[in-house]
Image (cartoon, rainbow, N blue to C red; front, side, top):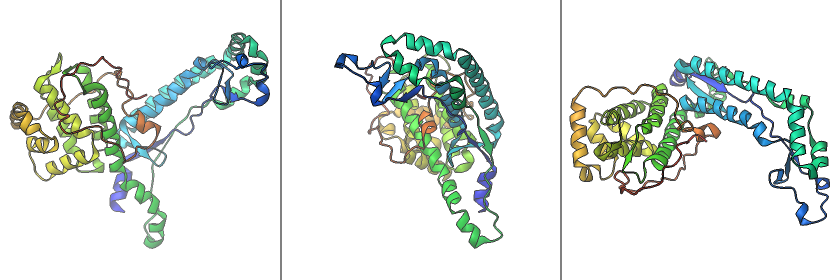
Length: 371
């Protein structure tokens, strides 16, 4: 119980269940479809999969975007826990301020939307005159829509049942104990999923990458740093990030041996077992270069020059710590974690030798990974 209490003392839980949206849809009833021929089927823009759109979806898309943004901000620094997010206490105030700022934008958008609601509905109906009767009958009142759009969040501490009656409270705390024991595993899974996205969408098949690749690495590092108290093997991963990024050029393209170092780092971070193995080796006293070689198949044989660079860097002062960067297109790195708890049964998209991929040119892809 003492270890569990220490963990609980270091986190604040954030819950976003108070956010509710309006889909802008109503059930498509049989009587809505008074069809004389197949040509009279409502267009896809108006109806699909048993529902009809009673307002232009673009008019309410900002509300969904702000809900996702709130979850994304929680997922960037916290991990899924008890239906919400366990966030490091040190980051809680900043997160609260961010969530409030999103809430202020939500409230303004809602006020503007409701002020123009009737005109917006009329415009949508006018755009589909052949279905005006159906849309008029399905339209909600402004008050109905007002009641469906809400934004809010709650923060709280979790406290285990008092331990004065050990046997009884052991049963009461059984579920909480199970959740707490799974926190470190949840952290590793969320990091692995994020790193796999970086590998897949930003590294594979490229013989050089820009400095923008460091933005998701900083995000991953920040999450690991804030939650490093969950497992002693997390801190070595932070050291690996600082170490590997210290080998990269400060400006311009990242290629050659520097790119191989980056591949090795992301390769380690993209798999739960590799992260745990690397962290354990360092905790047990292994040097950074040896742990790196052991964690990345083929690195010692195929990248001798890189190994020499790593040895030299290991003997120097610690690599400079990455400083927070401005938001980049890589804003949805932990979108999977925000949507739902990640599964431990992730398929591993990496085969042996991935550290040195062939320099196959691919078209540039969007780096929006938090969608």
